[in-house]
Each structure stands twice: as structure tokens, then as C-alpha cells.
Image (cartoon, rainbow, N blue to C red; front, side):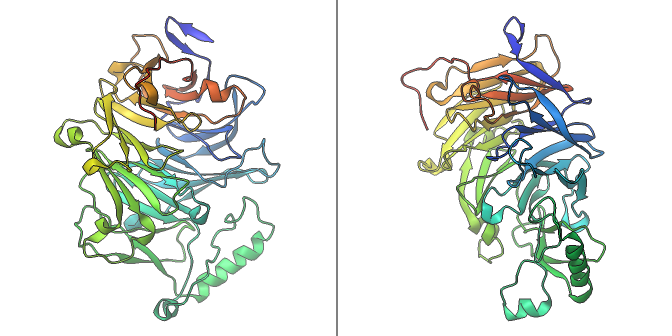
Amino acid sequence: MNVYGEQKYSSYYTHGSNVHCVRACMNEDGHDVLAVGGESRLEVLHRDAASSSPEYTVIASFYIGSPITAIAWSSRSTSPSRAASWFLELVVASEDKCLRRLLRSSKQQERVKLFPGGLTGHHGRINDVCFCTSETYQNYVASVGDDGFLVWNLYPRIYDESDKDDGDDVTHMRLDSDQESGDTEDEEIDQALNADLRRQQTKVSMFYSIARMEGENAEARPVVIDDNEEPVRAFNYPIPFSHPLHSIASHPSSANQFMVSDTHGTVYIIDWTKLEEEKPEGWRGHRVVELVDPRALTDHSAWGGAASWKPDDINVIGATYGSHWCIWDTRKLHGGKPIATGMGQEHGGSRFRWSPINSNLFAISSASPLAGPSIKVYRTQSLDTPKELNILPHPNQNRVRDFDWLGVTHPEDSVRAWLAVAIGKRIYFVAAGDPMPVTPDGMDY
């Protein structure tokens, strides 16, 4: 263990360029893989199960060509330690305002597939991306940014105009040989089928282009699929928001909901599967709930913000706005106001993440280099006494660009509660679950 006074970390990994994003895979068969996004490349790391502290080796490297702003793991991803025919699938966002689908398997090398742009893509910075965690909709990806909210289908169905008029149930057609697994023995047949479908059918997508910031009366527009388009298609709904969106999440216990947060103190839970339905109040008719942070709404100088859905409880959402944090419980709405608030990062929080292995823990990182490379870890039973992890010694102008909790790979992991923290060109691995003070009158969710 490396110790500088109170500054400590157990190990680190050097990426080669400044790290912008880090995301651990939380699939049951993927707890030991980690994605690291830098200035132009994303690496997937595999953890050595024999080591009690995190030690990683690279198993995949993807060239992106632009700094990475968000990473999402597909629920289909499996680790080499869990299956001989392992498979990696991710979607990443980058500063060039593009989304890319990344594929790697035990039999095929790295592949990068660009999402379509133009009218069907983002026109502003993409701040977050996630897969739908339900098996029913595992082929759907959602992204949020400065210009709105998009939902993408990696395997869209193709139909002709008569299908739409007759109201027939349209079978999903495979446009990409990677739909069922990373390696398909019938790849040549699939390619021939896809080519035939492209030639014979009038391809008008059921998917729509978003009306960004255009008001609630914006109309959905069909997107015509051209023969030369990428296999990743989008359906985008007219969902105008008043402010840029910072976070999006899906919860494993709800197939039809996304949590979306904006940069000015509001969190929305949206039933995205019914957005095509017309309602007199527009997209707001599909809200399940709207949560607000009154302090952030009135503070025009509040910084960005980030939100996180509690993995083991769909009713609990946490967020950081400016220098404080909020926790909401949808069973106790109180007009959408939080049930608990507290002081977070003095110079502004940039990330809020619940621990997936210890439901009593959440952590907040700072958005400012003035705070140094540190993270505050909170326990729900003692919210007033957080533990501050100073990963590197002060003074140090490198801030925490991103962090994530690791899954359980070693028997000690559930107690140690490891964090992967991106600072400069390195990922530092820090144990956040060491003993913390607990007060008897604390709150437990």
C-alpha cells in the first residue's frame, strides 16, 4: 500500500493519456472487467482474481480518436474468467459528439461501429449514456447531453409501409450478426439476408428524430434509412428540456423507466416505452415522477450536477448539485423535495455514485482542482460524518475526473468496497469500506 500521511491507495494502472472516464462492469458474469477511457482510446482491463488488491491487465483496446465523455456496459458482456466464449460490448460517447458501439470477443478482434449522426444524432456534448438493464430491452441504449435525450435501438426492426398501415405485429429482423452473440457461425447467411432486406423493402424507420429545445409541440419525424447507413439506427423522441442533461440511468427492477437529471436541480423518471403515445400535456404526460432540489433551482451559480439510482432500491435516488447532496425517496415525495440533504464537496460535486455491493455507501467527487484529488464517502447511517479519501498528497492540482465502484471479485471485496479513481493518466484503486463512524440516529434506506 502506498501512503502519504492520510493519502493512500493500494495499486494503480497507467493508461498512457489523461483518463476522462472509468466504468466497471456490474454484470453477474463481468464483475472483474473495467473500462478506461482516455484522450483517444478506450481500454478494457481484466482483474487478477488471485490478488486481494486490484491488479489489472489489458484485454481489449479501441481507438476512438476523441476524448471519451461517457461509457456504458451492455448486459450481454461476459468476462474471460467466466466463459471460454467471452464477449465484450460497450457504447461510448466522445467529445466529437458521436456515439460508438465497441465489440470484442474470444474469436474476433476489436470492432468499432459509429452511430448515425446528422438529424438523428446529438448536436451538443454527450454527458452520459446507459443500456437498459432489463433483459426485455437489453438492445436499447439511451444518451443525454446538452441538447436533449435520445433512445437508440441496436437491432431495429425493418418493415414496409403496408406493415404500418395494417397494424401488423412486425418481427424483429437482425441487421447485425452480433445480435445474439459476439460470434455467429451463420455470419455469411446473415449478411446475405441483410443485403436482401435492404434491396427489397422500403425502409422507413419507426424511430424518430428529437426536437431539441423546440417546445412541447414539436412533432416526431420518421427517419428514412439509406442503403449506406451504419447498422446502428436510432429512434429519437421529441423530448424538450429546459436545461442540459447530465445523468441517465436504468434500474434492473424496472424495464420501462429511465432516470434523467438536468444541470439545474431536477431529476425526472420517464416511462420511455410509451413516448410514442400522444398525450395532451406532451412528453410530460409520461413522467412517473419529478424530483427537485429547491436550493439548486434558486441558485443560478450551481455547478453541473450528477445523479445516481440506488441499485438495491428503485425508490431511492441521490444527486449532487453545487456544494451539497440530496437524497429522494419516491415513497415520501413531499412535493418532490428531498428527504435528506447535506454538505458535499465545497467547490462543487461532479459525480455521485451509490455502491452496488454495499447499499449503505455512496461517494461524491469534486469538480474543482481546488479540492485536490479527493473523494468523500458517506454511510447512510451517519450522513453527517463522511470519510474523505485524499488519494494523492496536497498540494496537487489534478482533480478526480471520474470514479466508479468495483464489483466483487475477491472474498474481501465486499468489505473493502474498492473504488477505481481516475486522476491524470492513472486509475488509482482505493478501499472505501474501511471502518467509518456510525451514529445511532442515522438514516437507513
